[in-house]
Image (cartoon, rainbow, N blue to C red):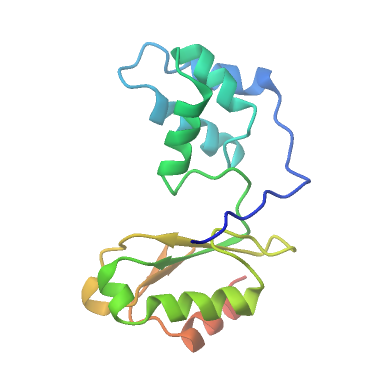
Length: 163
């Protein structure tokens, strides 16, 4: 079982007054929680903890229900991502081609756990479950650019070249 990375202590503070208009924008929509979460993350780069009770109250949900949705969808972040985001596929095809070992080496190189961000906020590494490159496994994505047949050396070079 993998441990959850701890949240950085110096998270940016977002005022409730900045979050509420983003929630209100979707109150009349059908199934509004996901659009609200996307809107909030789009505005701040993550879903601040104080958004959870605001969303729960607005939608008559429990905080646990809102937190459950945030934690279920891996694209929602509880802290801002690093300047560069490296996603490594962990689905079956990629696992069979060495994605677990590749991930372990990358995390070790960067001194991170899954979904962690380097202390200098340069790189965030995230697990994803299918990038659609099953025939070119293992697959990764760096800053939106797909990388098929990913290797440790190739990912290390890609990170070094990232501005």
